[in-house]
Length: 117
Image (cartoon, rainbow, N blue to C red; front, side, top):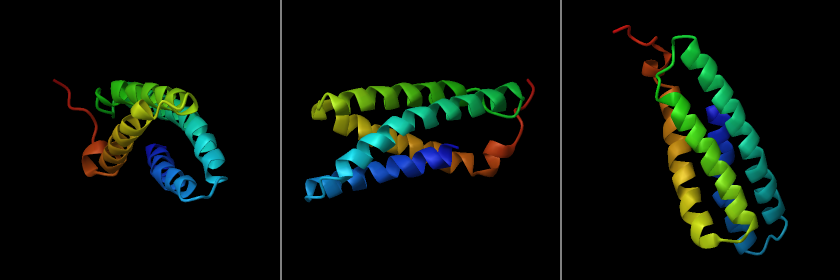
């Protein structure tokens, strides 16, 4: 699910760029995807929780998933409030974290069970 989230996040700057180049319909899609990202982040939290409680996932996954959800929610709020001084840098941070998390999820390390200490 984090891969779907990351792909949707990567579409956001493209849609914003289309809007800035004159495609006024792109901002509506940008807003819709932004709102759906909050739902996707909730699913990421649920998957991370199941993964961690199942003994496979690293413990750091859950707080990162929660922070990603909170960042998405704050990002949508800032976007609709047209607070671009917050919206743009937060969007960059969300893209970086989402891509890194999705890339990590596809590594062999992510599939290994947690070691018992």
